[in-house]
Image (tube, rainbow, N blue to C red; front, side, top):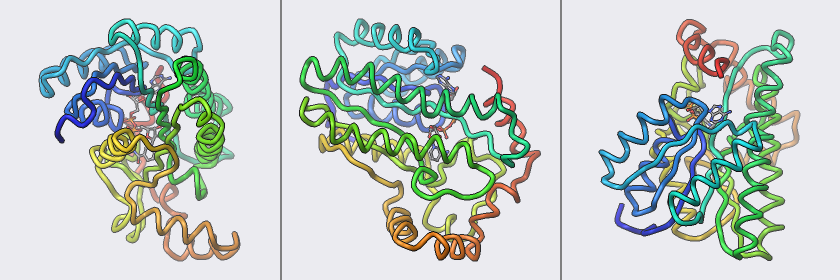
Length: 283
Ligand SMILES: NC(=O)c1ccc[n+]([C@@H]2O[C@H](COP(=O)([O-])OP(=O)(O)OC[C@H]3O[C@@H](n4cnc5c(N)ncnc54)[C@H](O)[C@@H]3O)[C@@H](O)[C@H]2O)c1
């Protein structure tokens, strides 16, 4: 990757596994100094040690619950103390407990709002205050293509991701006057445990399926170019989303249904998905 981010001080939420872990690894490999936070304190310690081993750069792991403002403020304090300051916050932590809205418990709905949306509001606010005071910094929010186009059986999750897209777009504009950049990354389907058992249609498999490392590369690119704004990963999936969102809703729904994207969740293999759902429900 080269040392394109030499010395940049970055904190990544949800960094114990998946996209957060790959992002932390890519950042460290690009010369950044990285702190990861995660609700899973055992996994975050193991991942920090492994990334320190494999990247040769010291990666520090802390327990973090993005739902808790006190925990978040403390995490940012620890990151600043450990790194001698902070230049970037990547708000990546999130859960995706798919299924019918009628059957979804209120607790499961609340958890998604608290982690996926409120957690990003908390992180963005606390980081923005610190960054604006110093007139520099970059906030990267990991949303989803489900924050741009919604499909059935994933309503509350889509609501939280539409929320993150709106928040980030507003902040991208509002914080520019303080020289604080805000990026929104909207991944399609990323090969992590979060999508275990789901049944993406053929076109999604073709143009919307990526590895965590691909999302990590997009984060690194946004930081290298010092550019805010929204980016879909992969880019080609972004063209499909742009096309879909330009359609009247009735047409978009017909197209989505005929492509099979409405069955992604309803046709999921629930035995394969059980392990993820159990973990997403745990902490
Ligand atoms: N995998 C995909 O297809 C996909 C697509 C689009 C967007 N996303 C988004 O990317 C982000 C990362 O997803 P992933 O696929 O890597 O999932 P993952 O489950 O592999 O990793 C998510 C991490 O977040 C942590 N986390 C959960 N609740 C937390 C909390 N309250 N505080 C701190 N950490 C917490 C988990 O412990 C886990 O380590 C999520 O926001 C997800 O919605 C994923």
